[in-house]
Length: 165
Image (tube, rainbow, N blue to C red; front, side):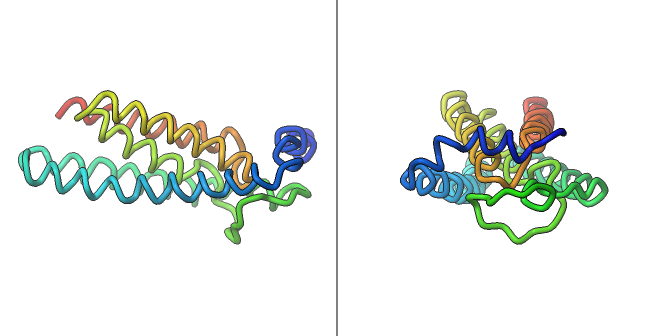
């Protein structure tokens, strides 16, 4: 990458002109993350209550995929944009390295895929929220675009396996 700092400045110029936009970026990032982590146990409770025989894949597949993403992150140990470039991120993060792939975006996408197997409309809305989270993570300065794209791709691929059960 030649000069990600300049690219980041261009991407975030509209945000820098509006403190409200930065507030909403931070709000969406936190709210979407919390929503996903609230919905997943609710889905597991629903499956356990109404379709017990289907519960195991909805626990094991996301769990194993999460471990895979974590191992990839540790192995690659890619620096985050605010570490490698002179940028001020909008999202507060102290973490060093492990930027690729985005685990937030992977998790949100995986949860969305879990819902998609039960309800097409709700799953689609959640996938849109996952994509919104991906944009927030890039504009927030804590991930590169490829980090969120790879996280989302792994979530979609792993989540697609749930259609087999």
